[in-house]
Image 1 (cartoon, rainbow, N blue to C red):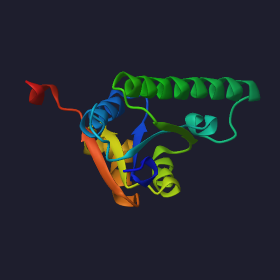
Image 2 (image 1 turned 30 degrees about the vertical axis):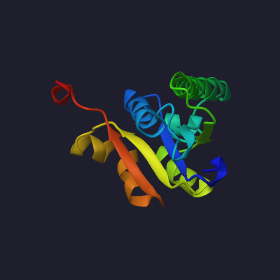
Image 3 (image 1 turned 90 degrees about the horizontal axis):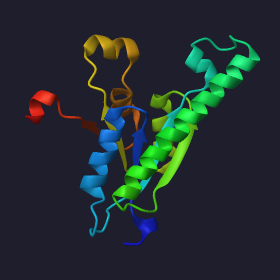
Image 4 (image 1 turned 180 degrees about the vertical axis):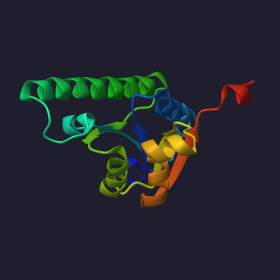
Length: 162
């Protein structure tokens, strides 16, 4: 199958061990060496804007916002580099990466629409009901709003791994 004719899989990454577990699991199960890969792969990282990181738009000195923006960009670069290294270590090539600014829930749904993705893969932080209600759940939001199939990869608990 020609690379351009393959459906697109988006994998969302952030700096959490849960998202890197989901990427690792996806690479092992869909992009094993020596096997024809069923998907094109694009990795998407949602980078926070400085004002959203502060929680209040327009607050803070210009210098502080510049430093904060620089730190956010460095963090995004580290996250993307780690994802690229994981792909390279598993010999998965032709991986596209994209950093988009905004709330991860909206970024992932927008990326699905922009790329006409067939599948969105997300890690699960495993938040309980209260924490999920307070912090919000990117995977839950995307499962309900993304215009494609959504696969939520959960890291096994230590008890289940025994």
